[in-house]
Length: 162
Image 1 (cartoon, rainbow, N blue to C red):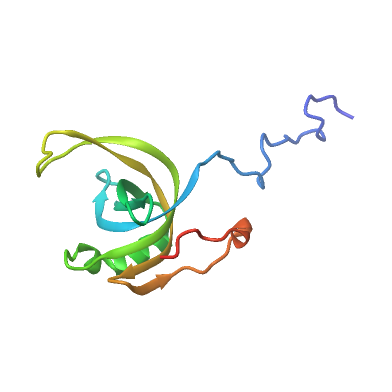
Image 2 (cartoon, rainbow, N blue to C red):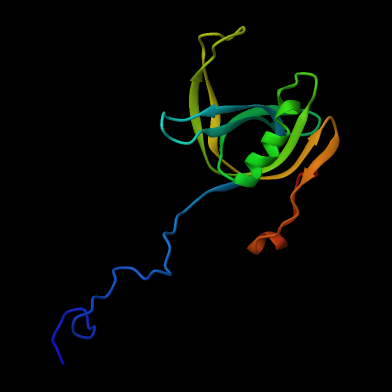
């Protein structure tokens, strides 16, 4: 028997990490409901185009609603497909598009207002990743609903009934 440090048969190497192991991360998850104001495209030359959704998230009591602005990178192909399919309604100023969504890794982002009464002022929004569209309504009509269940989600009820 050979004497080697990794206790494997002679001539073989023990891999540093099993091929079945995956990287693990700590993430913060959140759910929301809000009006989607637009979809923007961004990316670097030579790389795939990415998309972000600007959402006015509803906050507070139904009698005193205020809005929190989110700029979320769309990180799910399913969510991107739903939003792109409904992009004409999203971009139509005469239609209201309401969605329930899941997001991950919220963080504060600064920006400068480019137009309007606040042009030149600094503002903040919430950045993060849009991971799932739970439902989408256009002018009150349900257009899309995701009823898939994943892991523990089957035990969690949704607070907002969009």
